[in-house]
Amino acid sequence: MISDEDLLKYWRDPSFNGSYRGMRTFQVLLKTDLNIDVPLKRLYKVIAKDQIYLIHQKTIHRFERRHYYVHNLGELCQMDIAHMFEDENTRFKYFLLFVDVFSSKLFTVPLKSRETSDVINALKKIILNFKAKIYEVQADRESAWTSRECKNFFAREKIIFRPKFGKNKGTIRHNALTSNFGGNRDSIYQNPSQL
Image (cartoon, rainbow, N blue to C red; front, top):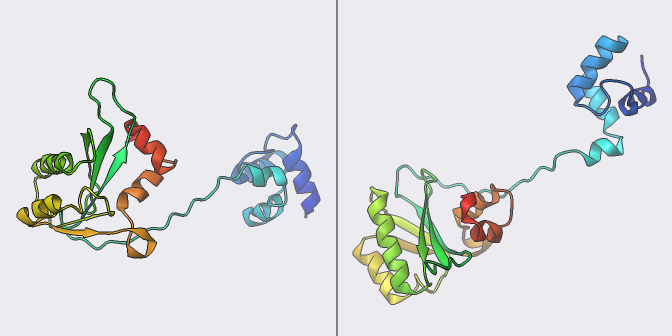
């Protein structure tokens, strides 16, 4: 039986074909080239002592997920206003991000300002393109949708509006979506072509 030190020597030896490769490849090349049979579990345990192996391991990112139980389109949607680089030709500074939780379908509408009238016009465009009844909308406490005009708009459209904010009150789904793009939320908003 081969010792742990000898396994580490083969792992670090540049003349051996299996050095600094994946564990399965290392195991196969030990068996075929050197006729040494080592269980994969033992290889992982021994090679885990090597600092170079540990440095090159992929980091595991665990994102906090919030589970929603929805059964059809439009039952729950979430929205936010995002900042983007200003377009010199059109003067758009923001865009409205609207996500259907059931289908994870994302709608975006560019905005020139955060004023309530611009936000209501953008919401009208989204409702026209949605092609399903929207029952409930969640968002953070943005001044555009906490205004009287926006509340009246939601009442006319028969949409329940619930402002959510913070970790204990619920998080907006697009935070989870943007975190999947590998980067912070602001960089995604500044470069919407990644969406």
